[in-house]
Image (cartoon, rainbow, N blue to C red; front, top):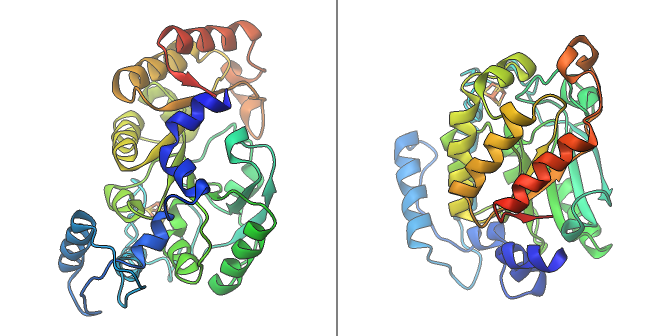
Length: 331
Ligand code: SF4
């Protein structure tokens, strides 16, 4: 099982072996030119050109591509469109649908429950989420404000310590990490650990966010939930789910490694699981998939008849058989 995924996560394994540097470190070595009063469009042009040229200097440069990404991220922060909710609010003034203004870390620890290839994983859980899933398994941190603001330099030190303790990666999650991109970049500017960065997300990011993540993130650990927009609207209050999630998976697949998680939900095998699996086979043939069978009714799930129970073995088996049938790598 491990051997299969070793083949698929090429970037991640190269970083672990020391053959390659994490993307965010490389971004510190890519020179750019910009001014703080440049228009956002001009900043994007410089950003896109730097990624295209990918001219990596021996020493860290100032300003670097990572500095430019920070500048762009804070511009977006003041008229927020990090996710496709596109609240367009100044997050210093108020919170959007995600309930996040300043980043709040709900917990951080060496996680031993992730996929085997990732453990121990230094997992940083943010409070707040761009989704409102009625069955959320982490509802206490995703739907309510909790946690504390940690100075970026301090969190960078914590990453270095966790790396020394054996962490194989930094795993940015929540809720969802999407609203916290400016903060994450601030942390990485202060960090020098040669440790891969994982983006553990529902993937409802805007195109701009996917561009900011390009070069920084080494592995996308995605959560593909629904096979249609009716289920996403009813159970997560999300519109236009499928088009956005498919788009972002294709972008992520082109950027770097990807491992797709799919949580099998009771009564959602034919409408959600099977269409997702077939789409992955057709569009992301080298992506690895983790079929998760641990769904249990949480939060408000008991108010929804279809998801008010555990999935049956037969439902999980139906999905895993489809994955095998289509020759998708399974972890
Ligand atoms: S990240 Fe939050 S504030 Fe920004 S667009 Fe999404 S829901 Fe709105």
